[in-house]
Image 1 (cartoon, rainbow, N blue to C red):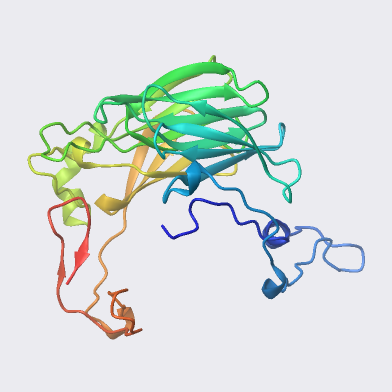
Image 2: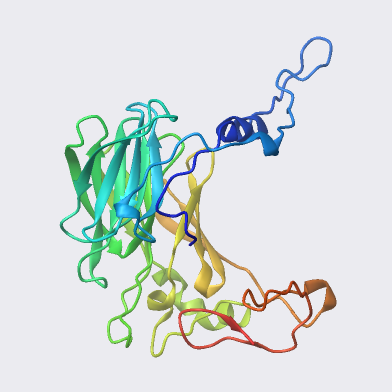
Length: 310
């Protein structure tokens, strides 16, 4: 995080540039000219047009945002003090107005997502190792529509492109001493089926643990099973809204999830990288004020919840 996390700095044309980059045409005009040619943007022309302070300017107060086009509101996670979702009038991006907030009373909100008048908030339990919830709101009235129980520590929430599913990556983070280590999971909420939920775990891969570890899966928690140690963190969904891909970064894997059946179907292992090779040279320090890429012969996997290079 940097010093800007407590404010929104909106660059004029940034959204247009992104849209220009993404929108391409599969069809040509009669003369062969693309209907939607990509136009190069002058990045140096971008400029800030507005900002708004969240959480009294405390570091880390504003982190995750979600924009709802139907209500023209921006929803901002604010965990400075009481856990709230700040509601910002985004009808005119050059003139941001803080409208009100949604106060979360059952735990801290980790992520928000919005789609066509619906806001979904991933909320961890006050007991971090217990099951969390997805709180679902009407973006116009801000009334609570439904509270859905999901897995432990829902860390990220998103909608499928068609709006039919709300998906969370439930990290299942252990207590500091590992005396309580819940299983990681992925929850799939069916919007059109009265917000029914399926929470999929990794039990189907337990018998393959030795083989998976030999091929790059990292399982390192003291006395933790595979299902306890896997910690999903981020979700992206295919354009046809049928498949989710979930990063399990601390375990060196990506999970493939069938949203229709509600099952985790594959674990794709990310393998190993030899930092001793010249072509994989890296600069491992941001504290020496020197840009220095070189190879490293020793890469240690420390038995904690992070990787370290020495």
